Image (cartoon, rainbow, N blue to C red; front, side, top):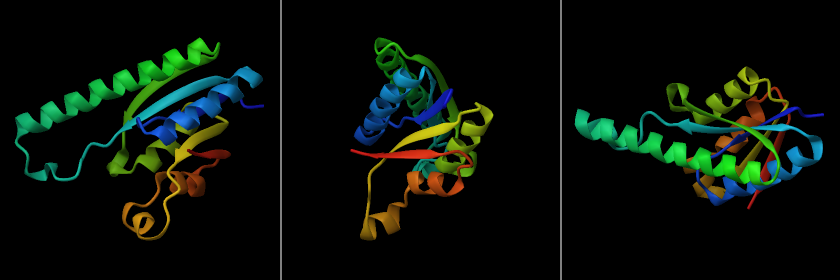
Length: 146
């Protein structure tokens, strides 16, 4: 049914829970997991940073993303699941847009995304990339709460 499943990873426990659910589903369906990490190119507070500091931060973010994707790959492969990894930068800093774009570009039939389930003021202030993905995605989305 779902030949390719996109799984956004950000290092959070909720993303890890999403990966576990996606891995089980992929194993049952014989699907390939596409693990995605989206780099946010404009972290808050960095507008005052020097060029050296900026480059150092970006390099660190890429190294962390590489480790995160490698760990996800190892978990999927240990479960006997086919896996691909992908790292992209968020267009205009919107992670949700990058997730939806990559689901289409990678021909994924399903997105499995962890959500924090924020409510009230924290939801109003921080928003929810998972909620935006649910609204924008042309493919089904499985939202997983930790």
